[in-house]
Amino acid sequence: MSGPARAWAWLRRNALPIYAVLAVAYMLIPILVVAVFSFGDTPKGKLTFTLDDGFTLDYWRTMLDIPELNDSLMTSLRLAAFTTVIATAIGTAMAIALVRHRFAGKRLANLLIVIPMATPEVVIGASLLSMFIYYTFALGFTTLLIAHVMFSISFVVVVVRSRLIGFDRNLEEAAADLGAGPWTTFRTVTFPLLAPGIISAAMLAFALSIDDFVISNFNSGTTVTFPLYVYGVSLRGIPVQVNALATLLFLVAVVAVAIVLFQQRRAERMAAVQPEAEADGLIPLPGTAAAQ
Amino acid sequence: MKKGLKQRLVPYWLLGPGLLWLFFFFVVPMYFMGELALYSGSLKTGFEFTWAFENFPDALSGHEEQILRSFFYAGTATVLALLIGYPLAYAIAFRAGRFKVLLLFAVIAPFFTTYLIRTIAWKTILSDDSPLVGVLQTLSLTPGDGRVLATSGAVIAGLTYNFLPFMILPLYANLERLDLRLVEAAKDLYSSSRTAFLKVTLPLTMPGIVAGVLLTFIPAFGDYINAELLGGTGQSMIGNVIQSLYLNQRDYPEAAALSFLMMALILAIVLLYIRFAGTEAFMGDEDDAEAAK
Image (cartoon, rainbow over all chains, first blue to last red):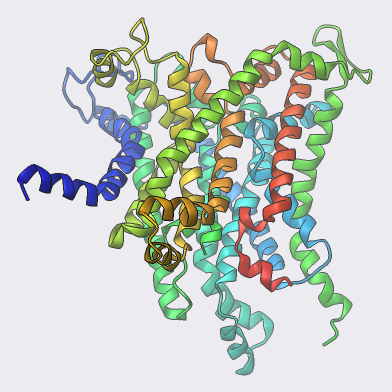
């Protein structure tokens, strides 16, 4: 075979993997842009598409020097922390009920959990605002917390539920056979095995909360979260420190996910359950839990 | 074994807090939104409940342009996401080997950066002085004035990008479970690769396609960030209208009417889908459906 013909044959054979690499690169472009421009030395300290002045670490060093940015980030972290605790507790209990129990009204419960996930954010935000207006409820941290827990619950249920389904119940029976009471069984067998799922769910709730803009925009009043701050300054030009912070948050998230992924695999090996959870099980969006 | 009353109440205790939260902060607000849609008046004169059903047709007729645009943008973005996502999901499911986890990780990686920041990054990439736009200009792929930002194309590109993972993940979940022996059997029976794909792979992955299409179309339809950041004045979508009516013009009845109609439309689509596919397609797998029998 001649050279070009061989190259063509190779290309044809590997077209799909090559395409996959290109498509993934496309998905990562904006993240890369954010990271690269966090080092870009720009005269006004605002995000532009010129790197003529070379690179600098200034914006990483002065990352926490903008008071409004700091405040908004603290608000977001606090909000995400409260949201995570409440939504994870409530959602885990729901998942246990749905998988472990038979009861009347299960279909209705499922429907009530699924529909919020399929509702456009603008509608959720608008409807909550309608209610808060009706009761002339002061908008602020409390209304944000109510909203964030509301939209996080369904996702927590989905994640914990998929974990529970791949669960080897023989282990619990073994514990019971060995004389453990229901509470001891839950504490020493069920919970440790379920923990990776609960942690994934908690991380997802945290990520959803800290990332939310649309619903928060409707219900924030004068409280400013990190996305709301970014939106506010985006009209005037975004300080490069935002890029540095976003990159840092990205790296923290990647490390956290890698750790959970590792732990999850270890737990699976320990329990010798089917290794059903790939990376997609980690942040299962609606529809993906079907993979398990 | 007969269960006592106390035991039978356990699932309700477990579900209670969550269901109450969803009821009071998801269902009840929908009611108030519906009620608000029947008010009349303005912020100055005060609002009054008057069974103002005319708000619904008024809300529709005033914004036909944005409604049609939302269907067109979200529809185009969904088709593009399917075209980009299907081969990628296929490659991850069957050709990725030991890179599978890494590729899946890359697919969800965008979620680790704030949605708003990602979209602003695209704004930077598509801005007038960006190298990409320069290349597009050289290739004469840009419209007359050489701008990419503030065009329909930019908004559709943003929507496609932002909701692509919602397409890829259900497609992957479905492809992953595809029994490749069926495809082999088709080929053994002398069907070409293309026929095998069209007659075996595609029909078997239809549930994944439908789930992906819904999960991409619905949020894209209601989105207003992409239109606001990447579009110009001529690209606003229905989400922009609702947002602006609520938060800027404070014409609550009209805003509520529009939002209520959007919810009704989405609810109709979702309930229709659930009727055929069950809630499992959104949140779990068949094991549970079988366990429930």
